[in-house]
Structure formats: structure tokens, C-alpha cells
Length: 303
Image 1 (tube, rainbow, N blue to C red):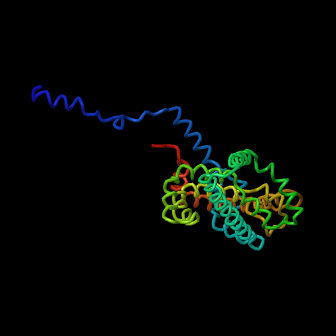
Image 2 (image 1 turned 135 degrees about the horizontal axis):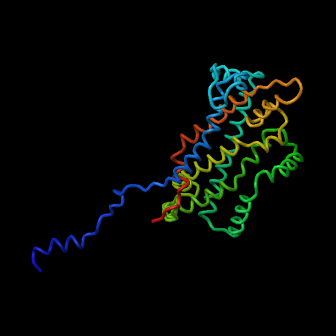
Image 3 (image 1 turned 90 degrees about the horizontal axis):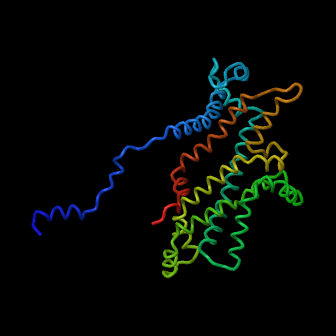
């Protein structure tokens, strides 16, 4: 073998680099059109809501829905929403925060402990528990609303905050999500090493496993917060005191004022109140987006 042929053999034996990253990305006109239509379909209602929140009650009825009226009344509408009927909207907002913090927060804590235990411990009846959890996910919440009302009525808890908080503490989907996430994100070898070093199960969970499960926990928290914040049917049948209403029921009561003889429509306040209602959810998703995305993709790719 000559020295001249050695570089050729080296070039032939060397692995070829993948140059696919340099190729132009293929574009699909049909997919682009479909996604554009989907984007428009998703944003038009939000645009309508924001635009009409800047109008007065007469301007709301006399102008085109997707364009601004002559007078810009957003600031005045917000002021009226916060002061109308002795500031009942602020009370509804505080009630909703209470239901979310205690209900959704408690559901996340319970799902975290239960999901971790089911993922990392073996015990008799574990398969039965798994079947019950999956079956609970398949049952819609509205199907359980009437039985829940009858049970709470027997206990004398209807028309109280506990009628909303206690059912919100149960999240079968959150438990299942934490269960699956903990199986993939918390290596059993790490837990065994901590036990060998003398760490208790609670300390192992709080100092090691919990940190690894943060993306999944945040994902469960977001789902629980959105479900509790938008909860409508359960408060509708459980509560009759306006002082205990969440935002969903309160805004519906304002909207119902347009019905009947001598009614006083306040659609501009309903729309402005709806804008104020969705702002906390939007802020929560923006702040926790990176945790949420990593939580949803957990376990999708394995080495």
C-alpha cells in the first residue's frame, strides 16, 4: 500500500456527516392554509372580546363587532366593573382565587404524593387502583355533579365554600399524569442510593424526587387551575348566595339581567369582566410555559 492511497482510505473509512440540516425545509401549502384558518378561528373570539371591552353599552349595539367604536371606554368600563353593585365583582374574583388556591393547589399536592407512591412502591391491589384511576378519568365531571350535590346536601354543606373546594381536591387525571411522569423522570437507582445513605422516605421524596418531578407537577397544577377557574356547572347547582359565587356564575348573573320586563342590560360590563377574568390564566400560562412544555414531552423520547 502506497502513501498516496492512505489518505483515500482514510476518507473512505471516515463517517459521512449528515448534511440534511443544510437542506431547505419542505413547506406544505395545504398545511399552512389549515393552520392559518385554525389560528384565525382561535384568535377572532379573543379579538372580539378585547375590542368590545372598549365600548359603552350603546356603542356595543351600534358598531361593528370586530372594530372599535368612536369612544374608547375601556378604562371607564373597568372602573364600572370593579364598583358595580358595591364591588361584587371583586368579591367574585376573591372567591375564585380561594377556590383555585385551596382546591387546585390541594389537588396538585394530593396527586403528587399519590402519583409518586403508585409509581415507586409496590403493594397488593396496585393493578386495581390503576383500573379505578383510569375509570375515573373516563367519567365526565357533569355526570357526578348531581350525585355530589345530593351527598353534600345530606351533609349540610351546600351553599358553602366547601361544596366547591372538596370536589376540586380530587383529580384522577392529575394523579395519572404524575404517576406516569414519576416512572420516567425519577430513576429507581437514585432513590435506592439515598436509602443506602440513610435518608428517610419523606426526605428522599422532598429533596430528590420532588425536584425531578417539577415539570410534571407544574403541568398538573396548570390543568387543575384552569379546570377550577372555569368551573361552572358545580357552583351553579351548589351555590345560591351571590357572595359565594365564582366569576363564571357571577358574570352569567350579570348577563341574565338583560332578560325580562324592565331589565337593564349591562353587556359592556359582562364583556369587560370576561377580559379581566381570562387575564390571570394567560399570565399563569406565560410564566409557567417552559415547565408545562417539558412536562408534556416527558417520556416521549428515550435513549
